[in-house]
Length: 127
Image 1 (spheres, rainbow, N blue to C red):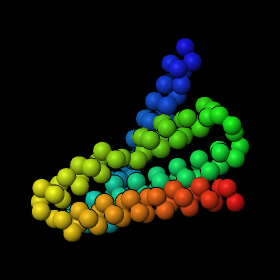
Image 2: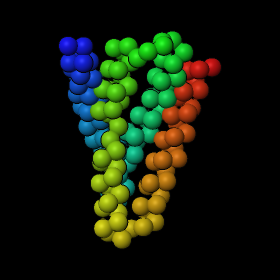
Image 3: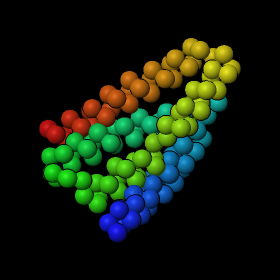
Image 4: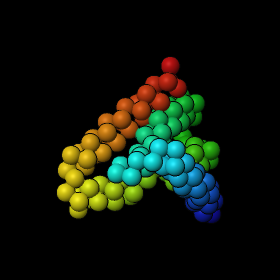
């Protein structure tokens, strides 16, 4: 029964994260309409990396085992908010269109900036 309760908790977090991702992506793409670069997905992923770093850094110093709030935020909310599948699809489109320079820039920037922001977020909360 515990796993069912946790699954529902993570699912609810995922619902909110996915909804927030949709809203954020639409807002960013309306604010900065660059049709040749998936800026909305990029923004969501790097902000999600920063947030996951902040939350894991904070929780690692406060709790010994993941609690309900941790699971709701990190796996549910932030798992739903970030979008690796959209990232992969957009990278595939660059390949199909022969846009190798854009592909390389997109992948490198997502990975480098994302990892850097996750590390930064972790270190911010760890002091």
